[in-house]
Length: 296
Image (cartoon, rainbow, N blue to C red; front, top):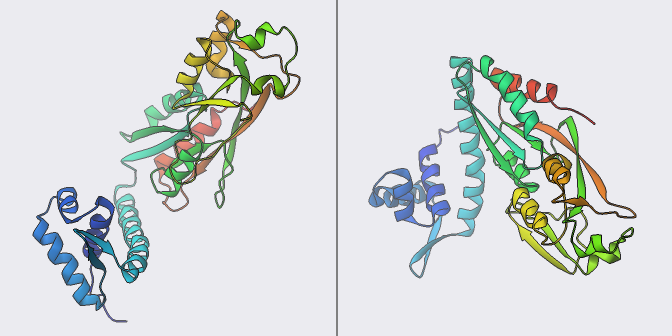
């Protein structure tokens, strides 16, 4: 087998040009001069014998061959990075950090309990905790940005382990017109009212989950914002029971008396990153997350 003429660093350089939108931007991102970036890409094209970029106006864009080779190179660079990470883990025996991505609706009390138990065992390992909504968790896992992920979605091609169920409750302010009807409500009663929904943080294929039958919907960026809106008398929403228990007790929120569908359960699962070797710290944290989950 012939030795490759193009290095991983050259592929990384081409990826940076495409991902950052140009030679100057790639140079800034890689802390190199623009002339060295241009030379690297030009040399690659000579070594490969095919044009990778063409000039369209003042912008360099990928050729058809460039698209194909760049796509294949991403997997190559990813595998090389995984190999280096594996060697590092073998040398150190312990991860420097664990990246945990959770759905924002998952009970934070259970995460806190697991992390509190993890701290004395962590050996200085950092935990990078990130919250996403719906498919945002899946994207983080698929993009290699999570070592462990907690999602309420069934992720294709991933094997998850059960954690717990979260109950979502249809609520509105006690003075909301829906409560003033003073009877059981149907979905037809909701159609003319404002529904507050939470935006999926995923970018590639955002999903709509739950009942979305209202003629007017406002979309907000977080569950906390949705709860504030509804508690202020603005619309109704399905919100996690564990997040609104105090508001329900205080009376700023009241469950809607629906004939059906007033409550729904979402089962949350823990997913490991199947493309990343699981080190001891990740394994311990995963076990603690399962141990401190409270299944219904």
